[in-house]
Length: 168
Image (cartoon, rainbow, N blue to C red; front, side, top):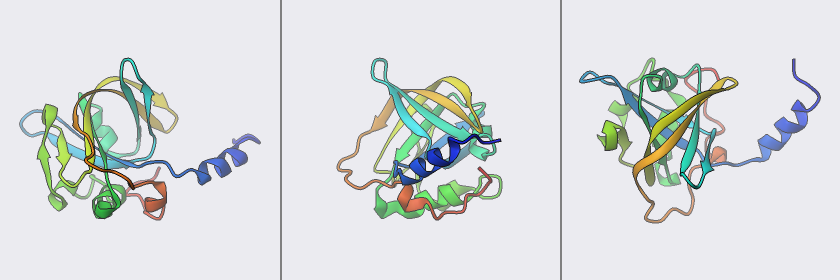
């Protein structure tokens, strides 16, 4: 049961226009399973050592694949490639191979890297812990590509209309 502080919290959160990320991963050997999804629960958590937190929904196909993964790839997109963001935010890997519908390559630690991303980094998963209906994946960056120029990245306001491929 929600307490009296939930309504003000929900109103404040509804005002935020935070950046959105597409997270990809793979697990397994030669027949590795790939997965990826749109993520809004993410943040830098430490400067020294550098750490980044990704929250994956427990109901998400990517969460299940990430359970056996050692790394995640975190992508930032500009608005020119909103179609790729929408693909990863509106389809579920339980039904659709998203990677057949976009350009990608195998990057550091064999992570699937989306070619249209403006920037990305791969992080090793150093810890996992519960965050309510999501599980936090604490990442230590191992490699990446910085943006050449990134002035207008995809944010929540660009994707709030999407119907997710699974319940939250």
